[in-house]
Length: 446
Ligand code: SAH
Ligand code: F3S
Image (cartoon, rainbow, N blue to C red):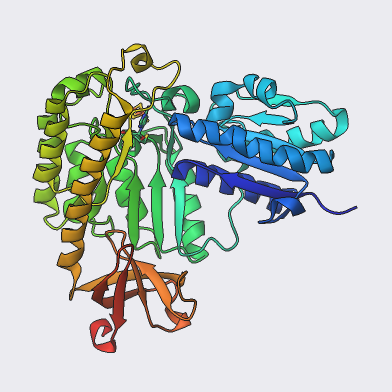
């Protein structure tokens, strides 16, 4: 009999990417499944979904419709739907797509092998979207070839309940993974070639993990501990929240060079009135004060953010305050979205009177402003020497290499394969729309 072969499609945030790699490692290493990048060659199709905005949610049912056709040709195919849409919709998924076999949650992905077995034996659909106390990490299997950069989830869930956001309902309450478990995972990744780690969570700065002797380790301490791991020379983290971005975390920027000079700190709006309606629990001044302190600790830092335009009741004046904040902070490349009403969130009860044309206009204006800022940041890099972690061959031209700067720019250059996995100093010689061009010279690296 041929082996079970999985095809997995992942949408949404980096935590979903991490979850999908956990699923893949578990099924491949422990259960000896095979993996394919071609859905037609798989007998198990897995969709890891995102429900942060309405469009992301609708995409799920379109994708399932495509997979239905494969299942009509081969009824032995098993279709599994996981992630945030699975948690939010639960049984509803079967109502809209009765050919789905498995619905699993963000906290039950480790049960997938057992669920697959049950579907095969009993031939009926299964659902488990419960929130057991982060059991899933007990089933972790480490990748043999993780590459040079890796994601590691340090905290799950969110307690903040911003009025527009679905995350607290789909990922549950904040639960931090124990420190030792994280240090072990990152050390193993480092031994297998990882040089840069990206610590993940909806609010990484809320991290409060247990130590082996029952104490609580704060995020600032965790950063310093990760910086001690041999081989890990760059530390990133996503996402932080202005709430709990405390002075002890800011101090890390003064003494821990391995933490990159690039911070993603979502603000959502530059209007206090809107921030209050969003239940963000911080105002614009508090946000600016945090940024000021961070810049004092790390003068060359670049800040990026998330913005929502067209939140119910957002006036032109509110919107202009957001533009003003963008100019003041000089945000680098950021994410911005039109507000999307999510069922079950408090904001979905608010009257939405702004036309879609107006929302699109505001998004366009905001994105243009950010683009200008990003361009200015790029131009500052022209002619400078940047330390680039070389990730592998360039996607555009496989004869060249590609890597990333500390501020997340992709740099393509002519280099040698043995540079992969190393930090190399490159001179930035050209700015393209989505990447930079670098030049390697021995004299920069002596
Ligand atoms: N933990 C992060 C947010 C994670 S969600 C924080 O502290 O802000 C990622 C981003 O999606 C949010 O920052 C927000 O900009 C956007 N987002 C979340 N819900 C949304 C909604 N209902 N409509 C539009 N954008 C939304
Ligand atoms: Fe969402 Fe706010 Fe938490 S944006 S993830 S509820 S911090």
